[in-house]
Length: 541
Ligand code: ADP
Image (cartoon, rainbow, N blue to C red; front, side, top):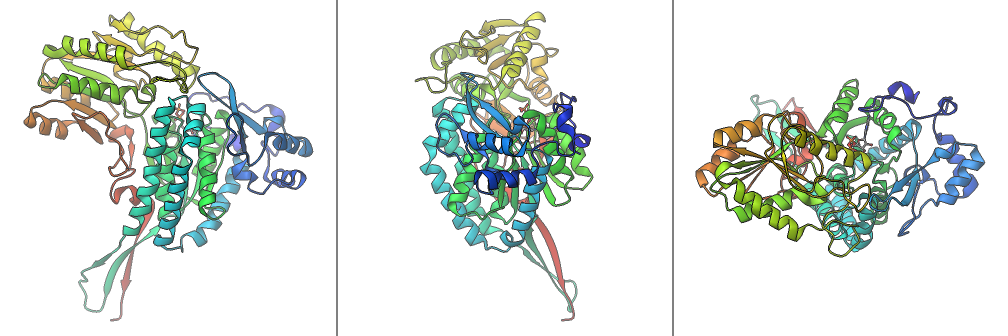
C-alpha cells in the first residue's frame, strides 16, 4: 500500500479519503488500460496524460477523455490535478494524478527500455539529443509561454530559461561521445587490465518548479546521453513544461519507455517518491529541492543502496569588500538575487557589506532597484518580477521580514504585501540585519535583500561559512590577492567573484555540506553519476 511509504516533510496527514484507500488507492494501471480501450486514447496515457488549457499546443489526453475514463471505470474524480497560473490564479491545465501503481509501471517500462537503450551507440544517442535540442529551440516561444503560465516568471526570463535548459541537451549530446575507459598498467605479465564505463540503469528524477525545463534537462539529458532510462516526477506546480518536453523527445525519436513522466498532486509526491526510492529496479535517484525532502529521500533510498545525487537548499553569502567596484556589485546583486523573483537555490541570501562602503552600496542598490525592477504579470511588457509560486511562499517571505523588523532591522524599501495580488511580494531591502534573524539562517527564496554590516575580511568569511549549506557564494573585490583568498576560503561548491550570473552547462553545479551530493553539468563530472565504472581483468596471456 502506498500509505505505508508515505513520509512528508511538512504534512504527515494523508490526503486520500478513506474510500480511496481500498486495494487500489489511485487510478490503477488495469483501469488506465481499460480507459485506453473505452476512450480510444493511446497507451501512452500513463506517462503522457495531460492537457494544457490556455495555449493548447499539446493535448495528448484531453480532459474530457480523462473524465470519461473516470466515468467508464468508476475511478475517483481526483484522477486529474489542476495546474494554476500563480499570477492570475487561473487554472491553466490538468494532469493525471498518478500514484504508486503508475510509478511502478513507469519504472518497469523504463527498466525494459533500458535493456535496448543501453546498447545504442553514443553517436546515435548524441544525434537524437541534438534533434531534441533543435526541436526545443524551434518551439522556444511555446515552451516559454508554458513556463510563464505555470511558474509565473516574466516571459523574457522564460525565453532565457529555454535557452539555458536546452543548452544542457546540446552539452550532453556532445559530452556523451567523450566517455572513455582506461587501460591500466598491469603488474603481471599474464594479465591485462582495463576499466569501462557503463550506464547505471533506470534513473528516478524528482525536480522542482523554479526552473521547470532546466531542472529536467540538466538531469535527464545526462542520463539519456549515456544510455540510462528515466522516470521523472516533475513538481506538481509545473508539470506542463516537463510533459511538453516529453512530447518533443518523442518527436525527436526517443523510443517508448526511455523517458517516462509521472505526474501527481502535492499529496501524492511522497507516495511516488517512496515507490521510486524503494524500487530495486531503480539504480539512481537524482533530486533537486529542499534539504528537508532531500533527507527523507536519502533515508528511503538507503534500503536499496541507491546512488543518490542531491541538489538541495542554499544560503548564499554575497560579500561586498571595500575595494569592490560598487556599480559592478550592484549589478551582480540584481542579476543574482532577482532572477525568478529571488526563487533560485543559488540566489544570494545574506548580503555582507564592509562598513566603509555600506551606505554607498545601499544607496546605489536602492536607485538601481527603483529603476530596473518592475513587478507584474509575466506576460505584461517590462515585467522583471513575477509572482511567487504560491501563497505559502508569500507567507514565508513576509514572516522573514516581520521577524527581522521585530528584531531591529530597518526597512529601506518594500516589506509590505504587494497590491498586485496574493502571490506577489515587492522587492525588499533590509539593513541593520543581525545574525539572530531568521533571514540570516534560512533559505529566503524570495525577493528580499538583507544586509549585514561587517568590519574585516576574516569576519566576512567566518560569517559566510557559518551555515550548514554550501551551494553558492559571491564576493566583490578588486584586490587580486583578496580574490584568491576568498575563492579558496569560501566553503561553497560555486563561487562567483565579481560575477552574479555563474550557471552554465559547461561548469559543474552542486554544493558542499547539506547543499547536496554530486555535480550536474561540467566536463565529465556531470556524467559520472550516471555511469558505473567496471574493472575488467583479462588473464591467461
Ligand atoms: P518546494 O517546497 O520548493 O516545492 P520540495 O523539496 O518540497 O521543494 O519539492 C521539490 C520536489 O520534491 C517536487 O517535485 C515535490 O513534489 C517533491 N516532493 C515533495 N515532498 C516529497 C516527498 N516526501 N517525497 C518525494 N518527493 C517529494
